[in-house]
Length: 221
Image (cartoon, rainbow, N blue to C red; front, side):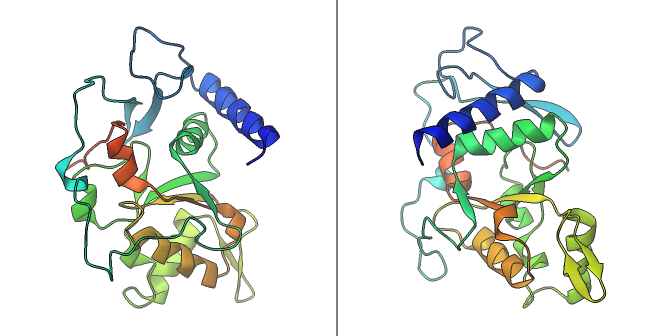
């Protein structure tokens, strides 16, 4: 990424955070997200949640994400570039999308692709859970998939073809660089004709989110 793109992205994040009242220089917070950003406030299940890093500097990673080795397949290391045109993003970019959504940008949908049993352990505030199984043609059905494309993603059918001109930008994640749930969905969406530039992939997922001590929320019961 060149300097112009980095500067532009920083400016976009600053504007989005300022618009949503999220731009904070410190407020006495010692463990910040970036030197100029202490927290980002989002809405999750109707409640305001502050996303910030754990302030306990002796805190260690959630044991659920401390394991280094899992059987491959299925838990194989994912590439940085998942598919042509699909942008891989990090935590600052994820916060950018969350802030823009909080500021009123309805064209963005942040999706936790994991199954509900994983979501119950904690997810990224401001995200919605659409399990990967619901978009997988081998595990779902055409009616369920079409319903998600239309009612959740904003796609439209026209003369038997999908029209994605007003479809949302999907920011997708799962458990991390060893998890295949969001990659499975992204590849399926591309086969359905979903525009690659409208799909963003947070490769680090919950593994990196937890390692950085960022706020998580548990699903409401």
